[in-house]
Length: 420
Image 1: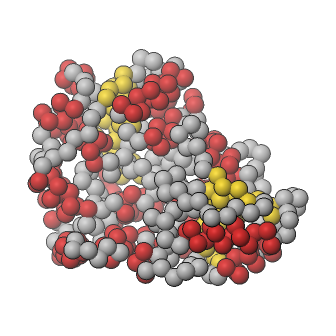
Image 2 (image 1 turned 90 degrees about the vertical axis):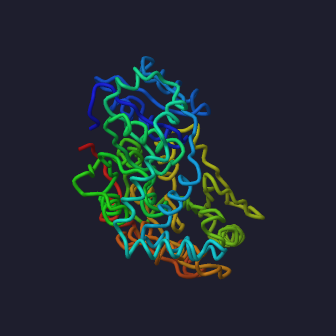
Image 3 (image 1 turned 180 degrees about the vertical axis):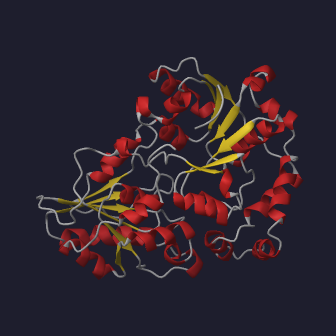
């Protein structure tokens, strides 16, 4: 666990507020606050939400401190650019190839040089610290210097959040405090470029994240601690849904299609329109739910009978509500979306959609999640998922119920359920 009698925690993203406060008395904030004084750094937009959660937990004595985003000058932007394109992951390579603007050659050059001079990344990180002077960050922190000095360690919850979390981390590094941290999501260590700041200890949510931290970020293995995976904890799973059978005797078969949004899957609207159009042709006991991506919203042109469109309310719900929603379905279909990881954790039958209705530009296609993007490619290879390679095969798998529940290898490699 985190060291010290007074611990500071960063919470600058609404999804992280939901994650770290989910579980009520058993939530991660409660665990960290046991026998400790805590200070939470957050934004004006999330202030009321954070205070409300603390009050519900009986942690009114916790101090909440506002922090305004900080940015550096030209050198700061240059070093940030170099770090963004300096890890040799398949995900970064796809991002470079998919944007053939004037920036392509520069990004490709940085990417190539990172292989020739791998030690250059550490040098750039060291220089980056000096682009955010202590005094500049101190002005953005609405907290007295004496209070800062009383903090023993700080927990950074999103090391890819440059203007807030990373700035706080840099400040505490400047004043000689211990900084521990993690990233928000399973793909952050491969898709956001090199971390601008490496903490004294990195908290890995899973064996996969440990592997990615060493291979792609160059973090030493002895600095990595296997910690709890905040979303993937058993107390979010419904006790009423423990069945692992792929064949259901229920009168209704509920199927969930997980939308990725046009930003990550340009064929997503075509897929939505097609599946909503053909659904009435399926036997009447099949019902379809289309789950919207929380950020990239896409609406089909026509919604037919036995189909519904759901935009899950992530801001006013807890993780248990989300997992109850997933578990209320008999089959999950989709591609490179975190819903597939969540359904894997919940041990639901899954069919991956490895096809396009209208062929997309190669480097923008969602098919790259199967052959290039490190996080999803690894999950799909481990999971033993059923895969549909055409529309007709997808319909056949659904109707015949010829699909599988993912293997436990994938679940265990991508989640850690216990504190260590």
